[in-house]
Every structure is written in structure tokens, then in C-alpha cells.
Length: 260
Image (cartoon, rainbow, N blue to C red; front, side):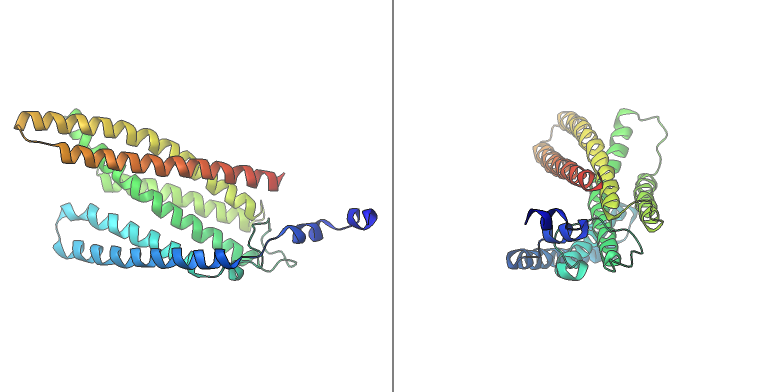
């Protein structure tokens, strides 16, 4: 028994470690996919309502709901498609592009692209908020300073992130690294974005509350509801980015172990 075990090939060892998708995981994916689909429908209605109002001030609101629509749609597609279609095994394993021995490399590649695009759309929601917060705060703290258009700044930042995604996909197709390498690049990128966003949202939140309290004192009106809304956004954003950073760190460790 010892000799037969030691004589097994690495491919056979890898296949024995693969775990198929369980019934619980299947129904959990269906439930999450349905929830994201419902979110996408609500976001589409809100986006349509915002666009019908017109005006420059509704541009950011339309963009906000558009990003929610994209995020929810991409996530619902990913969850509603059974895991066995993406891969014959539920657990991830390293595959190289154009590998004739593993034809399912294409579906795993498409899955990584789909998940990465959904994550970037999700992060873009918070990036949009931070960019407009920065523009508003600059108006109050530096009234004479030249201000760039916040939507242009947002589009440039998002374009850079999607450019990294495209470069990552190109390097995989050029066989510079495997699917685990793609996951590692995505995880490192989003972890860095999470760290930056946590710092920015904390700083901007403090300044925003200062501005609101000052304006409230000058105009002798209560700004408690606006302050609470800013605190809620800050706490929610920081919890999201902290969770994303820790999760991505675990994924980086897993991908690093598989690449080693």
C-alpha cells in the first residue's frame, strides 16, 4: 500500500483532493443569486427614475444605481450558474491557458473574469462616493483651489483598475502564470484598494462631520441626521473593506501555497 501510494502521479493526487459541490452549497448559491437578481431589478428601476429627472445633479445618482445594477447582475449570473459548469470540481486548482489536458481552463478563466469584474463594480460604488466627498470637502476647505471634475477623476481611477484586470487576463493567456496567478493578482489589487479606501473614508468622514456641525451652528439648524448618515456610511464602508482585505489576504495565502 505504501508503494502504490508513493507511486501515484501528482495529477491523481490533485484529483483526489478535489471536492464536488454539495447540495447545500448549490441551494445557497441559488438563494444568493436570486437575492442579487432582485437587487438588480430594484437598482434598474431607481436608475431609470433618476435618468428621467434629468439635470447635472442627478448624474452621480444615476451612476450610483448603475454600478449597483452592474454589480448585482454580475453576481447573480455567477451564483445562478451551477458550479459544475464553471469547473468539474468545486475547489479551485491551478490551470494553464490552452492546456489540452484540461479543457475546462476556459470556463475557469471566464469565471475569474466575471468575479473580478463584479468585485471592481462593487468597489467602484465606494470609490464614486469618496471622489464626490473629496470634491465637496475641497470646496469648503480650499475654496480658491482649482477643482477637477469628480466624474472624470472617478472614470480615470476605474479605468486604471479595469486596465489591471485586462493586463492580468492577457498575461494568463500568454501563459505567464496559471489561474491561481490571476486570482492572486486580483486579490492583491483589491486588498491595496481596500486599504486606501479605509484610510480615505475615515479621513473624509471626520472632515464631513466637522463641516456639517459648523454649518449647523452657523445656520442654527440641526444636522444630526446628516451626521448619523455619514457615520453609517463610514462604519459600513470600513467593515466592508476590512472584511474584503482579510478575505483577500487569505486568498493570497492560498494562491501562494498553490503556486509554490
